[in-house]
Image 1 (cartoon, rainbow, N blue to C red):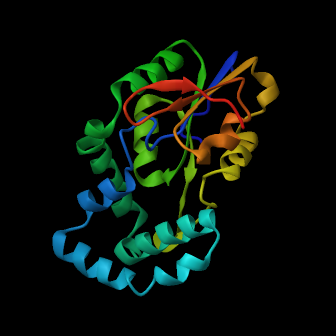
Image 2 (tube, rainbow, N blue to C red; image 1 turned 45 degrees about the horizontal axis):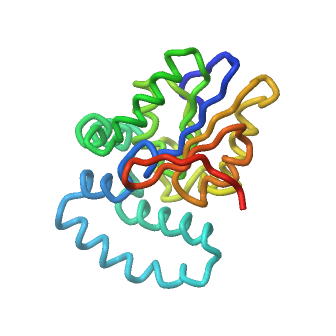
Length: 215
């Protein structure tokens, strides 16, 4: 997904989203925002029967299946238009309070300097697309699957984490067109993305940043 095609400049600047541009996870915040109390309770009950089988899967596969199972319980059968409306409402009304001002300033400064800027995230396009459209930057993320404009309960892409992040970046950008690549992240899931960068920054929960070094 490319919300705004950009002409390659001298620099490519890559940002993880949850815990990097935000103070924490946005998936849970999105559920609390978009699902009413009773539906949230009954949905969690249904999940008790779905999630135990995931414990035996590989970690990244488990995360992907768990997210898909949660989305299926709460949103399967909803139209693309309705989910787009919910995602945009979350982006406008709840997401601003979750953003880290220092990191948003870095993102906007890079964009305004003419750098090619992209969000590379395991989070969903539901709320990341309107954010990236508003900021005028590129989006690479986990995308929902629709058939005849109705959400199927599955993903259209693999979970955009770990090696998948690097793979999606390589598919989206000819890296040899950039003289310098910078990446920002906050977890081991960003290591493959860091490996593509000339300069990588690890963002701590307390707001500190440190240059990342591979083991």
